Length: 431
Ligand SMILES: *Cc1c(COP(=O)(O)O)cnc(C)c1O
Image (cartoon, rainbow, N blue to C red; front, side):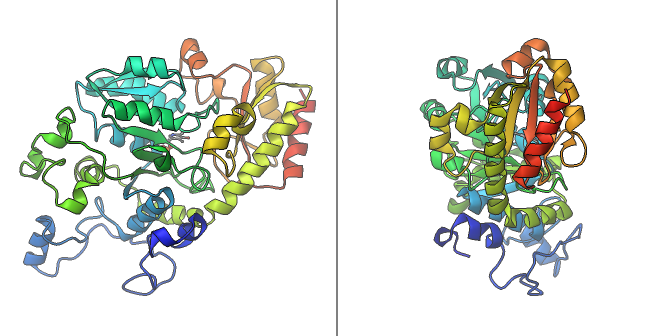
């Protein structure tokens, strides 16, 4: 379909699938292609595919028509030129970074990251020779001070986990671009139609598909969308300017044919990261996410509406010390970046501290809310991060990431708002 003509709600249902359904069977739903390899008509066909003289399917670590529809659909929703699916959001982050930076390079990231991403940057990237420097979110002086001649990426989360700070994406883009660097935004908490970070200057957008896009807590996957046209010809991007030994000396920023040059990142991610390092999304998982994405605009509107109502309710509750919800806590930034709703997450502090917060989470866990380490399910979820998701971080890193001991993180589902609020009241009364 012609993506430009249609709204996000329409793209969520149709984009990426050939018109008239599946090209071989005309199946209306996207089929799951459960195959490891694809037949060559003859040796010449195989040789042409391997030699990139003809484009087509070779082996399912690299390409699968089910995953392809999903990648194209997410790219359409985000307004990007290309996208690649990966086995998890975590893999999407790791393979995005290592598709731009290599040993000896550095990245600069906001410090309020998802716990797993923070650990990856802080503890694992150094093992492959990449140093991450952190700056508090929206502290532009500190961000700029952390950038040096070795920096290759500026990385932020659109709405940080779990403190829900809204990043000023346009300011980050201005700084990154002034230094010739790409801005990578993890927008997992604010999928379209809440936010399209590429429209605000981001060059790459990452999603964990496991969260709101999948939307039913039924699978693990990730995706990275490329805006297209980022200039990787500066020699400091060695991975794009030095001849690639795996591809007969190809230089990704220079030697690709014109239409592919603009999406050199996605081509390199597919042919180097995914092909030869293997973080492939299973087509069954891709199919699950395709079911989810069809209703994403409907669900995310309800998630946002319910979460705002919960945040307003908690603000007036005597047992609640403080509440964070993007449109209440940072109204200016939320108005600019999240005019269609601020997402399904609410965080708040239980009066008393860590022990009371733990008791509250235990009391809430049951009929409607589930106590678990996930967000973005249609079902309401609760967690006490300091004792679970963020427990591997030091006290200092916890505070830097905004994870206070009394903090409760709610992922508000699409149940009836009256039921959600009465469960929260019951659990607050019980402590
Ligand atoms: C969950 C999450 C990830 C990691 O995604 P997985 O699919 O669980 O690997 C990365 N970033 C954010 C903001 C997340 O919420």
